[in-house]
Image 1 (cartoon, one colour):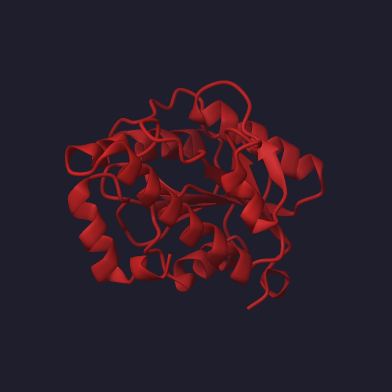
Image 2 (cartoon, rainbow, N blue to C red):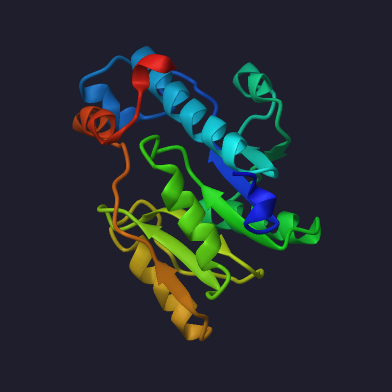
Length: 206
């Protein structure tokens, strides 16, 4: 399904370059730094290729646009910029709406097992909600979509178990409508790799 049949939406994928020792460090209790970087590459590739297949307007927000990993996808690259995760995501949102996007969906690369239906449900849900979130078990979310530029990340403590709760506080303070999808999980720890495979991630094809 082409994204323009659902809504004119921009998909922004927040992605780090696969530098050994700098990505997926929580996997390194069971994997080497090189192996963890390889798993990050596999996860990111799955997420990016899925978005390309489903949607027409996909941008990679990269921490290092010069890294050769990103060239293979033939997609626009946007520097993440400075600041914490919330500041960088807000920066990407601002650029997207200024560039004419009617709606924006932010993705990370920690959910390679996410199915097509979750993404499409998020987009469809924007027809009747200002914001859509995909909760995950650690208290964060694997996607966030909005149909106008809102400020949702103030006072959010990233990498804590309160990210979703604090984001919802910002949503409610602005009296915005929101929808939460079914709860899922991120791939953060070694045991999550097998869980993601069992949930549908075909790691062997990467």
